[in-house]
Image (spheres, rainbow, N blue to C red):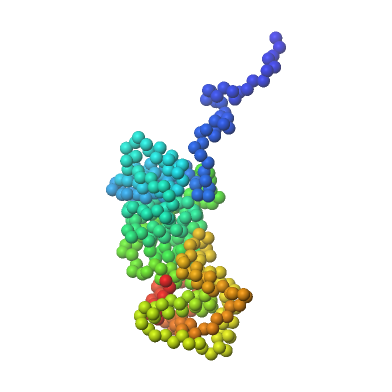
Length: 379
């Protein structure tokens, strides 16, 4: 008897457990496409998720803030260990999926989902923050958490590996930066664990690290704007000496002179701002301009997401040459401020020849105190 020549399709019977799902069926099981622009990389490894929650050392009375919960792989574990969770999610689809996941369970009453950008959202008071952080908001999120009126007891955050290593870098190390000094001034930072790319869906292009940040209590009694303003100038070129950073850039001296005028006005100090000898000004200005070629602004060159304060933006715009010329007639206030800066760097602190990448927290505190004693401020 001849064989049946009709082609048999093995994929038509979708009811058997061995049949391969069609592309259409696979698409139906996929909730939605991840938005990489929002940094959506879902942590899929339950072991890593459990380890992150364990390192938060949660108490049954804790209120936890979770940033970027996604589909809730971390959230459901946090809810088992804490009293309440506030989850801030940017994507409405993710927020709906998270709400659906806990719907009808006892945990649903202890979960509050806030839809929006965490950087712009007014946050409730909380004890611990846990986050698989979208990489593009890493720096703003860290500083928002540290600047809260009532900072949390601890933050366990996942970041891109290089960013995480910058948080706990020490003076002299390659990744030591303004971010390192700023965060270590306001908090204790420790490394928790490394997380490979394959623990996420979809896998990101970079490796990740989890860090633990514990804000210092009580807080250092220093104005953050002053401290950050000093560091912005010092780390514009972290391999340059502090003398070059402060005295070698016309925009920096203009900024300090402007701040000094404001300080004198607020304290009823009379200033003589008459012009100095024009010939001396011309020679000195030309020397400053020669070094100004390297100046690219006050933002952190190591942090592409660093947001420049409005005051620095205005100073940066004012410092740009107009019609190819960069010549200003300096008054006596500018000369006075230059001499004050020289005195602080060379006489008072003796840090003029030290480079920012080698300065520690104590060096910067000494600088800030000496500048403030001379009436020079950075905010």
